[in-house]
Amino acid sequence: MADMAERITDIGPPKYDDMWPQIVKDNYGKWLYHDILEPGVMVHVSETGAKLFTVRCPGTRLMTTMMVEELCKIADAHCGGFFRFTTRNNIEFMVDEQSKVEGLKKALAALKLPIGGTGACVTNIVHTQGWVHCHTPAIDASGVVKAVMDDLFEYFGSHKLPAHVRISLACCLNMCGAVHCSDIAILGVHRKPPVIEHSHLDKMCEIPTTIAACPTAAIKPSKVDDFKSVVVNADRCMFCGNCYTMCPAMPLADADGDGIALWVGGKVSNTRSMPMFSKLAIPFIPNEPPRWPTTVKAIRNIVEVYAKDANKYERIGEWAERIGWERFFEKTGIEFSHHHIDDYRFAMTTWRHSTQFKFTK
Ligand code: SF4
Ligand code: SF4
Image (cartoon, rainbow, N blue to C red; front, side, top):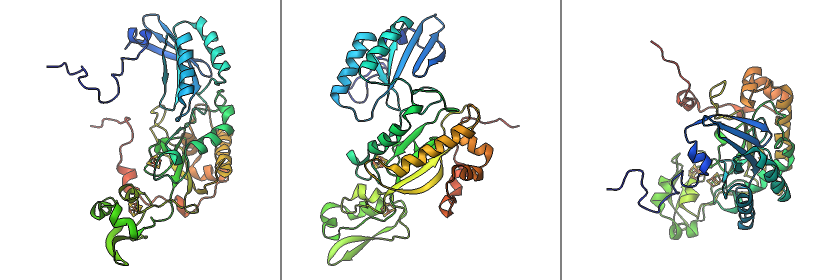
């Protein structure tokens, strides 16, 4: 019988350690600490005395094969053929001696790849698929991210913010991006129920499956103009797009209805304070392709007010908790409205979102 750890099929990703550089294999479980030497350059130190130097550059979620080939050439020339992507699509090149770092940095500069994305900075924005690929987006993903990151670029290769500022984008509330727990979250929102194309619905969709797909039970079967179809109770609809996933005859994209909600103050880290969910800051900004100027301006405003007002090491959520959310709205000049009042309290008090806990007798 095959060993449990042995792969016997070609399904799924390769085993995680198959593609490690030798120095990582040799020091597995032995790393003592890591340090950031300058923005974008880190060193990991092992108890064996080995040191691993990492240079980080921004990548993109959608990348051409030509670009990947260029990255491979740099990895072949400087890093023994290895490089890796972080979860935020940063690219990390690793060398085992400090003397190799300068040559690597020059090669990256020749490819016009900036170095940064570590520590108290705005690192690469993690995002979803947007108009390029998915069927339910309320906004584009790559386009918004490009516009926002172009504006905040000065914060990528520097450490001039109080702490990490992690920005994420999800192009609908199905949320394939980490918008529930990011310092600044850009969320695509629909505001109108699906349009029902009664003449095609019965030919394209299974009506029972479509009805079952709705989390709020807003859909019921109906005969419309002699077509077997469905109707949607608009008061119950939360514009999630699940029905459209099941039934292409129920599109809900709408030029006026769709746009961006900005959320702030989430974090995954357990450092200093518990992980936090993002909270609503701006309920709606219209879609403004190709450069989304209102969104870009609103995000810069939040970053700049935070940078000026927060204490060192304080994340956006920690800063807002310390000064009080009322002050957050005052200082950023963001209007507070009825949209900000959370009426879904049950989950907020019962979800466990931390590994921090205390034993009591
Ligand atoms: Fe598709 Fe929504 Fe995921 Fe965007 S967040 S990729 S629209 S499911
Ligand atoms: Fe139901 Fe969501 Fe479709 Fe609205 S968008 S009808 S809530 S599945």
